[in-house]
Image 1 (cartoon, rainbow over the protein chains, first blue to last red):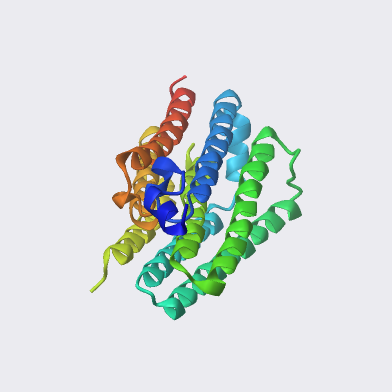
Image 2: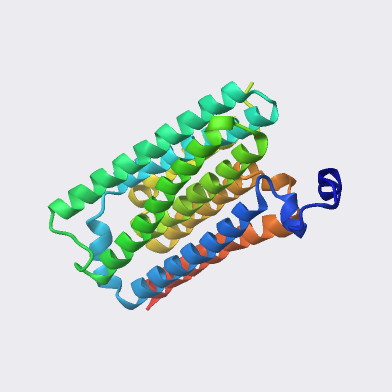
Length: 191
Length: 86
């Protein structure tokens, strides 16, 4: 079968082919959403069981820094979306520029989050302080790892700035953004 | 003139700022939490539709991502409502 035949008949991914980027990234995205969903579910159930402990834990967090990080991450997501649009318009230079902005903002997110951790650890807060902090560090740490992985993926696709690669990297990046948007109010603000 | 992506970004920034202000402006937990989570659903939907480009994708994928947002947020609100009401 020639490459043209393969293209005409699809690549065997079925309905996943209707999504932007490499279908494999969407398998990863849906798996990650399930994992984060279960972790957030565990967090809210634990809060319902230990409301006093969780209220005390939440009061010790810096919601303003986390709010600032929300603005940083959605702006980074916007830059990644602009990179995709530029790549589709065959404007590789512009696409690379937007990807670099997205990555820089991702780096800023990590720096702010590490500042927040340092502040908390400096006050004697750790993984074993309470069930709230065990789940807080687990959830935010797992998310932070994904931010780091997302920056690496964006850096890899930035080199060639081809449509499929940029769409793939951006899709993963938006998943990281989406998870934070839901996680932030649940961890920091909902009473 | 700003395009859809730029408008979505502005909406997300506005809702992010509103989210930070809700606990100070709305002292009642049930109402405040509901507002916070409605904002989260709105932001999540805008990211899924406009940034992830699911607006043009088959309804199945839009539905799955929207369902994920709604289920997580609804469970969070119900759990917090149970604590407030008991």
